[in-house]
Length: 467
Image 1 (spheres, rainbow, N blue to C red):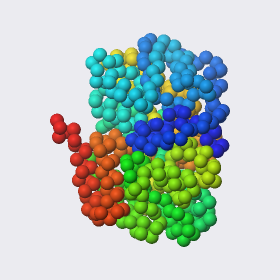
Image 2 (cartoon, one colour):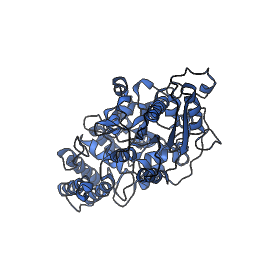
Image 3 (cartoon, rainbow, N blue to C red):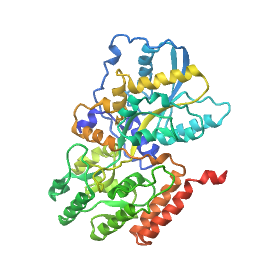
């Protein structure tokens, strides 16, 4: 647990809502999360000598944010953000930043309301996730911040997938701060007891092949350990099953320009057929009657040897139960045919709203650049967000901790961010329907994937037809 104590209480930072709610997975746990006391990285920064003034621009801007950053113990949401504003004002003394804290229940509707209201005053800067930010960009209310993505910045971002998540068309509309990949988990006692751990790469990012994964399943089964499940009840946790299935034989959910779904490709059909084969052997369980939360609960209880649905929030919210049940988790990325996975991820970043005021737009750029890049606060902001750097140059922000290094090493494998495409929420329903049809042998792999593509493609052009 030393790693989690070192990086603070992720859930208190709001990462549970960002990773599970913001990305549309919806499997937030109901368990109470114990507060973890930790040392604060960079807490002496405010005691340093006054910073050099970088601009005398004078204006007032508003910064709206969800409770993404961890606060000091006993402090209310917004305390750390106010300290950041004070640090910002050392370099930009004439820019007044007015802070507004949003919550994940009402916040999205409040932002939407001011966008739609002719009398509403939109924020200048918003810290959020790509799905919502993309929806605002499609309404034409965000500033093009492509000028902030210099060649140096773009080449420093850990993956093209993250860069793509920040774009709307050809324009950049989101400046990234931190992120984290979704992964799977194994029960250490079971993989060591079966000898399966010998087949698993435990170096660096721990990437591995589908062939190696299959051998691990065989050993676990031969040793009498219970398998994990491919759950299909409800849409919660669908990102995990998408990553698992599409990576097995290097397929993809959509084509490269995200204009059509590709689940009926040869690669994806091979993956689904292989899953059926594993299910018949008992190497993977038919979870058509179970949800993502059920899969996590079964793993945490020590019943199942692996779980397809795992991330930082699961590790935190289940830490006490894992300890009580004697379950030690071994995190692994999803296996792929070529050993190079394309992982789904959560991402924190900033957008700037277009209001026609050149001074406010410039001041907003100064604020975003300061929060993400200034050496006095950038590392601590990443740590307090409960995630990992999206900039290669930032290096190891968790001081050599092995668990953190795995997550950091996985960031370059961040793949396509699908959540921002039109009709994504509707598509998710068809996704689980397809899985259920295949696992329960209601339809063949060919028929089920053809049906999925037919209906999923219609969600991409829904608004166009209505117009």
